[in-house]
Image 1 (cartoon, rainbow, N blue to C red):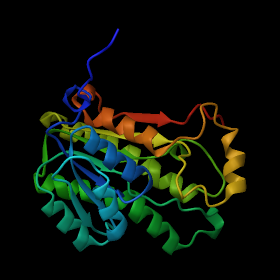
Image 2 (image 1 turned 30 degrees about the vertical axis):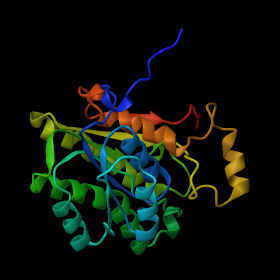
Image 3 (image 1 turned 135 degrees about the vertical axis):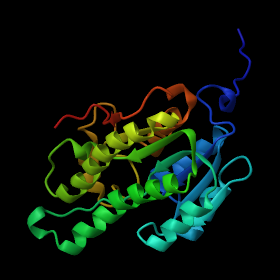
Image 4 (image 1 turned 60 degrees about the horizontal axis):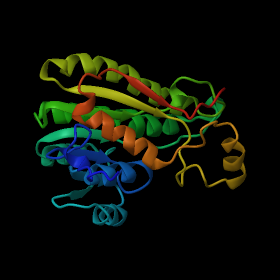
Length: 250
């Protein structure tokens, strides 16, 4: 038996007619999310600090109307200009982030502020600005990229874990505040994902693989979860944190 091809963009799981802002879109998870959103029919506004890599990511997206806006979201002026220049949005994926490895006793005030600014303050303040400017459409879906580190204790990632746990707490309150307009807010909590950030030490990376029954994740694994949360198929999901840990035990 043969089956007619499915127009993914036109299904309840597709994003046809939607405009989605993706931060950290120049590489890793953010780039995968941006490209997959475009494949699903969305018009993507991609932002990141590296303009050249961002342009390359947008060039890889199918469809038309996509935009690349280079911006450092730690810079208050750049953040405001991004939010003010996006236009109407149906979805936002906060993918930009930093790892932040340091034992607590070695963590400086500068280190703590940097991790919190990038991982927590930037996505929250960007969301605040978008809401203030009425840039988010009714039934808009907002996705924050948290981590399983928000739920577990691992040596050397206390500041990082705190930044990701803070996102979850804020997301739950935000979900209630925006529900009256049919808007939704959720968190994804990935385990290790194979990007340049974690493959810099090959020996450590190989040692981690055996801990994940379903294997270490790929950027596309996270991207496909984002497609579901951005689509109308998940219209009754809000205030939820999705653990994507591949079955790892601690």
